[in-house]
Image (cartoon, rainbow, N blue to C red; front, side):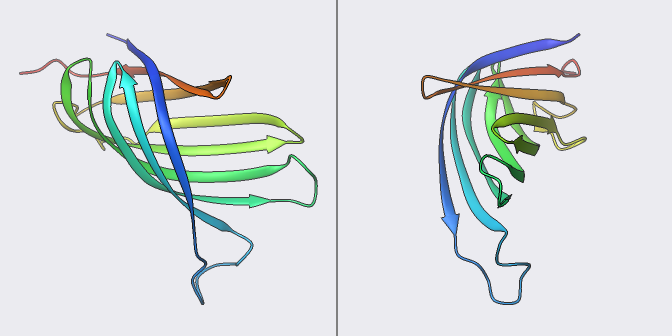
Length: 134
């Protein structure tokens, strides 16, 4: 049965130095550190790669994040895959749970997460399915 979890999160994004001989130096690399509140209680850690363009407000990013948390009281972890663009200030973002990444009581979790930022507050909506516990 489809479920819905919502709440807020705090996020810290820390730029990481470029590495000699690894990729193109115009690709920025950032560490992600999140604290989830609400129906998800826990933290997420990951890495982001981003690239801007010569046009103001046009960028792209990808990120992978491991979330260690409880979701509606079920404890475990899962991975999120982010894919985002901004075209001259208009954002588009897709965040999906990586298939078969769930562990613990979150084994088998599947779904998508959406993010909203309003007045400096980050909120999430997780639409997911989860097998029944044995």
